[in-house]
Length: 544
Image 1 (cartoon, rainbow, N blue to C red):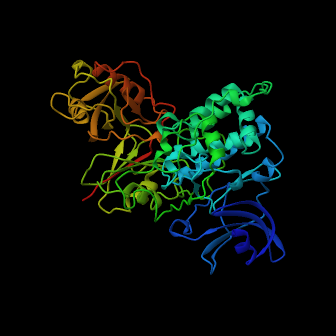
Image 2 (cartoon, rainbow, N blue to C red; image 1 turned 90 degrees about the vertical axis):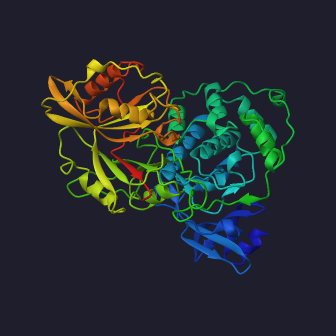
């Protein structure tokens, strides 16, 4: 028994949760109270390099016993475990929803650091007297339970949508106040219909059917106005038909995505095998597997009242702050882990750093977005940051960029209004452009879509506000069709998109000219999508 293992090391005051493979207890150490976790030691339970984040409690001690177990200890500064709150009955809907929103903000910051939990239980969440939510960075891992995201059971979770699933089941458990069948069914039947609709999406079996990241979830939850709960059903079981419990092995994916069915099955089998999660900077996704990069959750920044800022932001004296800079990192090396290594290395202090994959290339490039066409690159506030990022690879070339064109499937045929652009005569300055194929799966006039677009633009001139500007295409990437949910990009964009600084007075006009040039693309100026964080730096990692 784990309680006996823990009792041999410290004085146990109260066991809060004990299951095969996991124990949470309040203990006394040197006259003071703290929380302790215990679990069998094993390859999946090695210490994790947890980031320093507000709302994440890291262990103050981590020891291995002679009996082959691990014990971790947390200071008693986190308030009360939600396991204790659940013991007093179901949580009021508004309180449960606010708890989930606060927890989602903490998880989103964790995703920004490239870490995903895959399971969130009330035993791992604490509420301080002032209402602040804290998550323990401990031993809980991903139990073989239907409260865990199905794709995370038996493997290391790397997708933020696994935490979207886990947050949905967590919220329902708070409303139920217990994990028994009747309590969960009563909570489900009395749940606000709009909230139930959101939760159903969160716990979809297929990750592709869930909200794409925690930022989207926060937006959905914040937008809810909870109605008064309906009267409880006298026969709740009649609302949800019974379902046979699926096995815990490979056939577990047969389960349905609807939350009541998931919960019913969960109540029948809370698995006894725990697959503990232990990613870190040296043991993260992409290290030795296929070249698939993590996709942490990062869309629009939620308000500060629910998303505490990262504690390790930095700034360059006289320049821009890393807390505000947006970095996209494309692994174009053909080897796994390069983008993750760059994020954990030179980009480790950037809270908005998004790794992805891209078409293979032999050289590394750093694209720096200018504040305005005509502005000198070395005079940009971000220049010191760019130099610092580029120092990681002495062969990396720094290039300016003003507009990024992401080609979508609406560019369906190569019709061109050639008169929109003209040959240069006396251009006043240059607009730098990079072109990325994010939609087309075929060539245009025998060329890759980005290369074809580059040939149309590069070296031509456009008139904006009565002034002539030369167009210079600094980079064209034909094969970058890779999804990245955290920045709102699908593998195949259905419409061509332009990214640029919206405070520039010239660039919307440039977008309009390019839209007129490309006959297949709608000519209405749309500007950068609100859901996509325009990159200040786009790092293209190549293998020399």
